[in-house]
Image 1 (cartoon, rainbow, N blue to C red):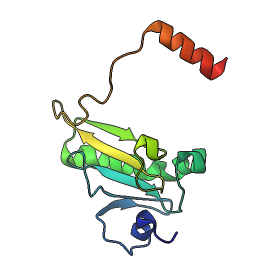
Image 2 (cartoon, rainbow, N blue to C red):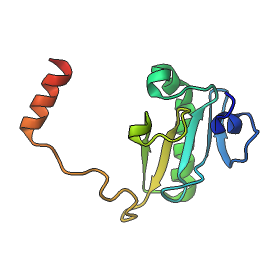
Image 3 (cartoon, one colour):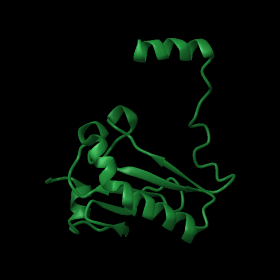
Image 4 (cartoon, rainbow, N blue to C red):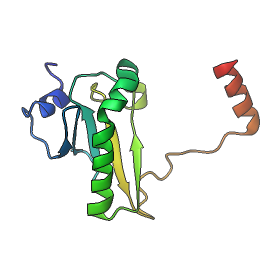
Length: 134
């Protein structure tokens, strides 16, 4: 898609640091990393977000996600790994081409400190469950 930087990366038209790829996906280092080794995995076809691509896009990228996860943990010696994805501007999506973030983690790195917030009470969960499934 014209004007999509991730499509340009997939096509080899934009500079990137690719770490893994196959016919369905490309993994490259994030230019604004949250931590060492922060990598994005994108499908080779243009898909706006998870709701646009559905389960198919997850299946397409899964082999590269696994390969890249093993690479990041194995080569960087990470003690863990976060995977996250944002759908829509309200969730922080800035490039509207589906992408999954892989973030290598080490104990005490503080990378996502404060992100999880405070736990909900049981009453909140019961009400939310009813709202979601009736």
